Length: 241
Image (cartoon, rainbow, N blue to C red; front, side, top):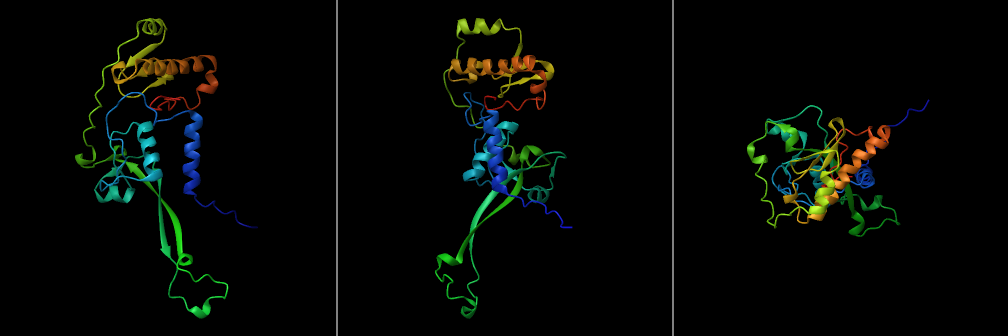
């Protein structure tokens, strides 16, 4: 009887599927119409910024998880700093692309006449993946891994739009204005919103507020569908889904 083989881990597929899930859920953390401060560039343990798709993915994960540190590291790197990843924390996949040369010392007699002897043919490209944790998922790290947030960009504070404010105030759902994330929390039936002063345009403030209130309607109208992953419903798109 043939043994079933464990499917080979495919980092590209994992990353692609994650992006698709985020898009389908409507969580777009790079579209955040308010200011929150904090570093926007994910950094390696040595302070070097991530590039390419890793920069994109870790930025999304930072926003969605609410991490305040820009630093990411592997489990061995954390252990080397006498720090420990907290139990139950989930890692994030990052990828590394490189290139190498095929064995240039191979005997010419071992090559078939059809072999390509060009320098280009001796170069092969590869992809490796590894897993990292944000500093906020790790206990025992030095304070240097938790820098002060970058200053919030200056802009004229948004003022309430009277007729819109009156409309939203009349809605019988408790809204708590605090923090830098916008989401609806079903267990307590409350909406959490950043202050209007964090928004450059008050219309964006009311748009996000309406979006979060719509999740309350979703729960009331279709409670079974909405209650599945609802514990925080990951509605943090920097606007939520």
